[in-house]
Image (cartoon, rainbow, N blue to C red; front, side):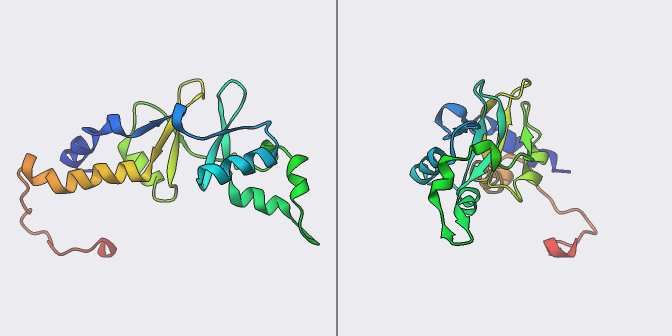
Length: 166
């Protein structure tokens, strides 16, 4: 459980969490992999969302997934990319979040993910929440906590308790 004061301070910056779908690179599930390869190469992202024709989130695609598809027994075969579609290689089992945000869930999920996909109630892609944006909020909180709250050590606790000792 997150300390209430810390949670409130992080949530003060909640409006800055979402990077809206309009500015997030994505590909359609029916695009061929050669198109997706060009998109990923140009935007320089490691992974991008995959959407259907109605903007529903379907999965994630990475450059590694595409390059793995090109590898054959006799070397690299880029011609395979024009014969395969994104939906054949994308990662489908992906955690998503919705509004209102659950900051504790976001913090746990971002340990293993660089970003989280945000969808609406119908599963339409609305944007992403990045680890970077959350870390900016955590940074704000740790630098301003004592300016907004009275923080006092509880009697009988170890002040030097390290994370690994818990």
